[in-house]
Image (cartoon, rainbow, N blue to C red):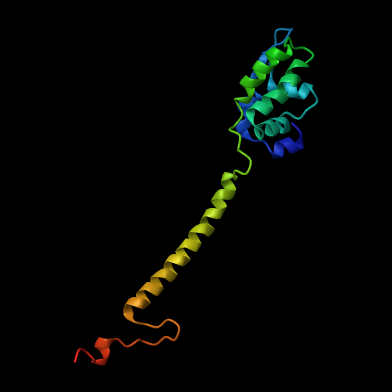
Length: 152
């Protein structure tokens, strides 16, 4: 594993990376991690790239890679079926514009704080209206009952 891959290892990619592609001519089972490595690619980087794209597109990119493996027995049509099965092991693709859950969680306290400030200000305004205080001047407004001028 490259030092870059070690720093960005995402455990949710392991099901995909360590899945079996199939049996090679020599009778050994070939995993995705081995196949990508044989093609000179960093398996973790490629898995991460596949996980960020729609599954159909990822399968279309993976199938030719499987078909060109030197020890494989897979024609492109069979490689497409294998690739489709494998990319279904990737974590769910986030649609373009969908926010990262960590980022969304980071925004939530700020949103909550704004609503809290709004609620406090609204409460102050409503309470001051009910008590007869003029918020702009700080004076107590006179009411007809306070001045003693009732009905004549």
